[in-house]
Amino acid sequence: MAFDFIFMLTEDDRTIADARARLDDVLAGGARHIGFKDVGLPFEELKGLARDIRTAGGRAYLEVVSLDAESELRSARAAIGLEVDCLLGGTRPGEVAPLLKAHPIRYYPFPGEIVGHPSVLAGTVPSITESAKRLSDLESVHGLDLLAYRHEGDVPGLMQSVCAATDKPVIVAGSIDRAERIEAVAAAGAAGFTVGTAAFKGQFAGGGRGLSDEVRAILSLTMAARARSTAPRRIALVAHNARKSHLKAWASRHARVLARQRLVATGGTGAMLMESVPELSIRRLQRGSHGGDQQLGALIATGELDAVIFFADPHGHHASDVDLMALTRLAILHDTPIACSPAAADLVVAASLGG
Image 1 (tube, rainbow, N blue to C red):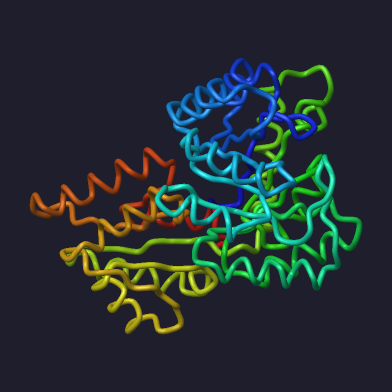
Image 2: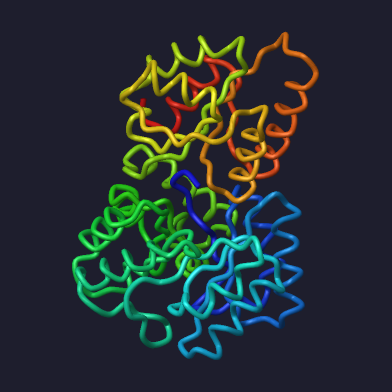
């Protein structure tokens, strides 16, 4: 996800009793990433909540609040049964990861030592950063859930240290309750943050206004903070043969900005760009004709891309149309921007890359 926020249907580390009714307000406000805890509602109600989030085009998150091993494993099994997109939290990746291995759930455990309920992050900045490094080295870990504002030390320094220590996305959770904290999270290089209790208390739009207004206020603050975000975006670059020269010219023009991002490209496109714009670091997939487009589709489906730049040949043959249509459908389904021309790609740069 480009710098964004996850709306948690929770108060005081519990899913709210009327979560399903409030979901409509959250969706009306424009939130697309929506989560809840594994406590507060019966399993079947949580399952319906997750289903409704996905049906509405959102991405569903479950955050673990368990402190003991048995409860944490039960939460991981709940995430599988609920079919959420992401599991946030927990401190036992060695035991949880094997449970998730056969499932498409993205896993973001807590770095550091978590104590108490509501949860508090204990330890020093160096010890938490070292924990983050160890977790990030695990293939089964897709990102980190950092309880930064539940730490009593240097919170901005902690966020910057953890974000600098990993190339995986960091979500900042816990007590994000004002604009200054959202800006600090963005400046530290995090991929996003969670908001729950503070929104239900009306701390963003002002007391007495509706929940949809709270969501809109948080979205507005998020978009403003996005301009300060130092987190690299994950951008896919691909072009049909007849449009590769257009992509080469476009990438050369935006080389300074693109050099700060994490780029992935299908094989032929990647080879062309690495030769013509050598300052770019590009992860190459298979050539499009050998499955590269399908690999891109998988990255979209798992939320690992922030945007797709696909310079399509408007005069291409039928096979090219099918590949583009498949990627476009996935991009729409998973709310991932896709630009098919230089002018559209310029808008992506202007809106989210600081170009």
